[in-house]
Length: 264
Ligand code: PEP
Ligand code: MN
Image (cartoon, rainbow, N blue to C red):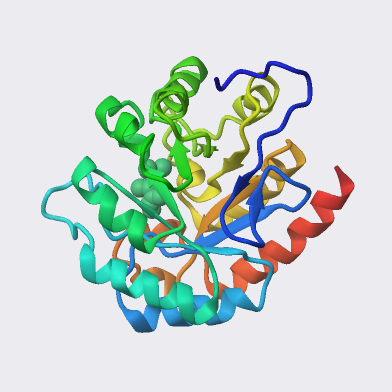
């Protein structure tokens, strides 16, 4: 189902009335790694709504490496997302880690993210086939392109046609960048599937000063959009502080992307 059957067929995945992946317009999703407070999300939305950022991100169920690290605000974070979504009329994307969270997340968010660590959580993928909302499927930490496409196939074959693939870097021998961004995979996925493909430069490089150049490269490479972490006070982010852009840098980056998009 994920495979390209007729040349140049492109699936369009709608996020809202105005925002769709896979069409003419690049879709930029911005926001913090983790939802921390109403004030934080309001500051982010206020700034990004005036830039060409169409959707907000923010995790409330966080897959943290350490069980002692902040695990996310849970349902109270979902309420913040719901409020910012309606107040700023911007769709929101947030991660779902388990089947038991699907109903609540699907009630409040416009798109459900499957994180890298869950890319092959097959029961979760099957359940998301019935979620009734588009899915942002992130590539596993060490998943091959074939495994990635097959993970999408689980969601599609269980009834949900709205899947967007997200390349976010893979593990390799060099951890100077947090992961290694596989732009070849972006080009390949665009050719072998009909699904929209976006890139997460933040988790790919892990360092804020490297986010902008790889984001521009991703667009030049044919990505349909980007998901980028930013924060009102980047150094104070409760998670992924090192890679968070300031809101000002986020807006500058988004403006610079328009030039790349019109050039390709
Ligand atoms: C995230 O988006 O904050 C996240 C945890 O991403 P990934 O699953 O790609 O590591
Ligand atoms: Mn993060």
